Image 1 (cartoon, helix red, strand yellow):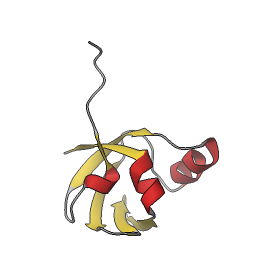
Image 2 (cartoon, rainbow, N blue to C red):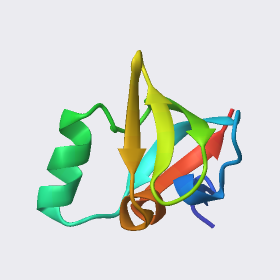
Image 3 (tube, one colour):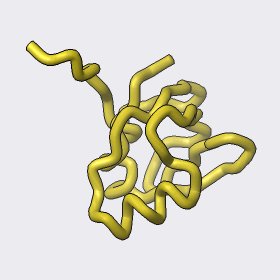
Length: 78
């Protein structure tokens, strides 16, 4: 068996939960856009408000993400 961490999707977080990003499964253009906003492996995120769009804190910035982006980001709860 490999050592890849089992992860959840960003969309599975509840309000107030925090997690570290472990993967992004998106097209190259979407992955670049997310990376430009700080969504990179190892970054910590906090779910502020669930929904479509959700509101996520990453660093000192709050970002709204639609359902597709929420499902494309793999996280490990902290």
